[in-house]
Image: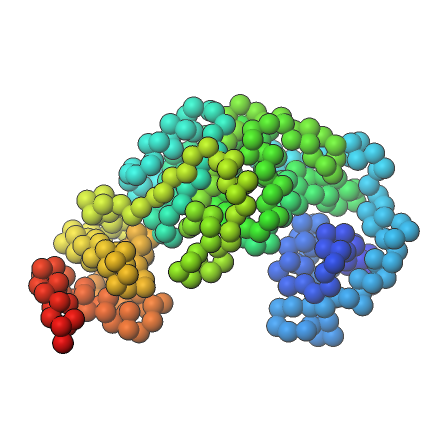
Length: 381
């Protein structure tokens, strides 16, 4: 077995001591983080080790590695005194770019004030998918000119992903600082996107959410948060899980973790007037403006949302979905086809109901009072 493949196995054994089965993506990402390529990890991804599509059992290969680890540390090249370990960080600064399609609304001006204050002021933003939570934070940072580091959270996110870990660089094992430590040292805005997709592995951030210096256990270093460092998290839920099943991957976040956020913002969908401006902006972006279509789209979406909030339908049309329809409309130049293509992910009954509603809105046939009368009539039959 190649030396590089052995090193990948050692890292797997060290990071996942109780695990023998691994997804392809995890193995590939680990190999890349060590500076290797496909020829180094492909020997692990063979038919012999595959237990199902995309999953490989490496028990027979890991066992010898773990036996050696009992008498000799897996990362033997790491000095006994971890505090002497060289730490590195990516010095590249990242800034959000101003987007011409952005329309300021909702909590945007509050977020700008928070970013401008340079105070440590952890903020939790929740709301349905596609209503502009992440975009709002990004554009607030772009307006202020603040360094912006976005971390996409998922169930596999752990301390190594967030704070950093040991990496083999140029034949030397060094501690590579993760995005959280980088944001702390740079005084940047750290955006934890989709934080309700995380597991309890994010509890490593609990101390960081207090705005105090943090001891990095793996190196013994103490990282001081620079002025301007702040944490903003976005989520589809308020951290209590999703009772209606819309966000099945949403987890219940520990109360002690949630309590460390200073404020919580519940982001709703924009008003009809604001949403029409957003839709028009996207039409201008794709150089295909139809104000009448824009007006009917937002009215259609608003009716569906009101019905959704009244438990009349199980799906909702988001602002993001309207922007997708606009882009599709600029390609095919047909209203009904653009809508049809962009709502085909819904089940047939929902899709047909939405299309039928739009046909009424576009023909100026929709009358809320009349619809209510029809509903009442149906209920008496």
